[in-house]
Length: 294
Image (cartoon, rainbow, N blue to C red):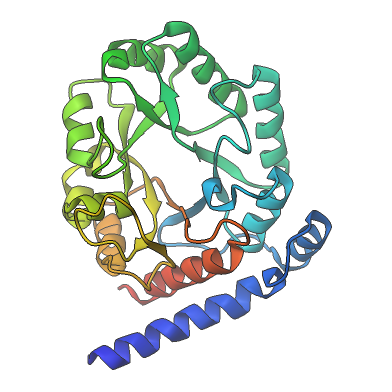
């Protein structure tokens, strides 16, 4: 297929996504307006070949209520909460339990978190574990200090909690790539796995498709995004999924091929002020690719 034809199809998918999901958000977002839109537009989430979710870092400048309404309007059933929406490291157990109940009442599954820092301090680590457990979180996306890994493994067994270590690219001094994270945890309890951030992995210069296949057995979470940054860049250049340099189709194909059972959580970082339009384009583009994959 010529390049021009591929681009035409890409733009058509993105336009369809925009029309279907994001028109209510072209102005400023208020909770009442978003909630009304969600009530009218959000039906039961459609069946997907992969489980799609939203990392609420994408919606970090919205309130929790508006973030919930936005995700429901996208007809996505899974959410990973950033610290702006629930402070996993410092909140009380009661506060976290209430957030979990709010999500459940809205029909959303709490499948992950923003990156939770886990220092080599049992009291601080234990608090984070107690909080995510109280909220009913499936997988804690986290960044443990290397010295804390024996402590973290002990708490994983005590709380029966799944963890996913997030890589952050060239500037990350501890876990720049999935490979580095894998080497740190491969001998530990299998509930400790990886959250592959596809943008940061590609920006480091590693092949994301290869990483997905190589670490599939311990791949517990995926952060989906796109970027214009070149390999080796110390700063990301985020863009809507489908408009950047990443091989999104290849990643989705790899996830299907390895029978990935976790969530593909969109982490849209281009626009913080009113991000729902770009997030809707990204979700729609991926849904279009999934529909076309045999």
